[in-house]
Image (cartoon, rainbow, N blue to C red; front, side):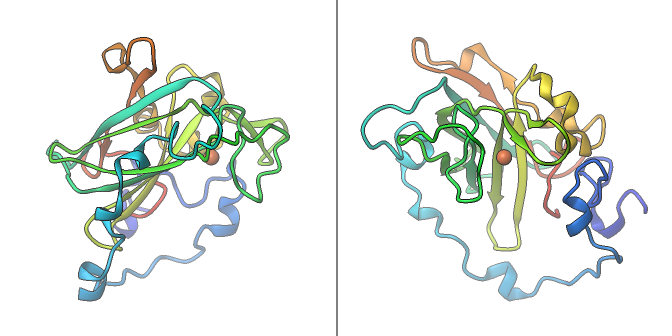
Length: 235
Ligand SMILES: [Fe+2]
């Protein structure tokens, strides 16, 4: 397979099949992909209404409150969406989802024996501004076990989806936290090529913290080029 087979830069993105990440064996294509040219409908058709996004949607510490504050360490996650020239990409709908501080998702199939938090849903969204910036308030997610292999634990992570101007322009990735010892054992993180996977790790930035309130982490996402972010979905 060439470095750009299927129009994808395999120096940056994880392969469809990565033996240590077991479920990729079930979903990886077994034959070469057939490129299908995007039609006008995919390029210009209806996309999620960016105007429906409200400021509270970007605050996961408040957007699902019922009777109090969510438990855990409050953090700010912020950064920019950039193109290959480092130019900001505005009006990108960013959606995030994550486990709560105990490592539990609000999802029917999550059977991890850890408590749900009645004040934390773990989902949020916002739209990048004219400088490509986004900003979320949330709770630092906990690690959780998964059935990939014996004693498998996911490192702390937040899932990201980016939606551009058309329904065909969706990218999905995960953001990690610096210094997490579980990164060295995680086949999803290790599935991204060496030299690229480090771009998935956010950077702690004291300047981004809010004194007496929340710590700040910076995670920029680059859509293409030498510094592109590894994406799980096709570019
Ligand atoms: Fe996850």
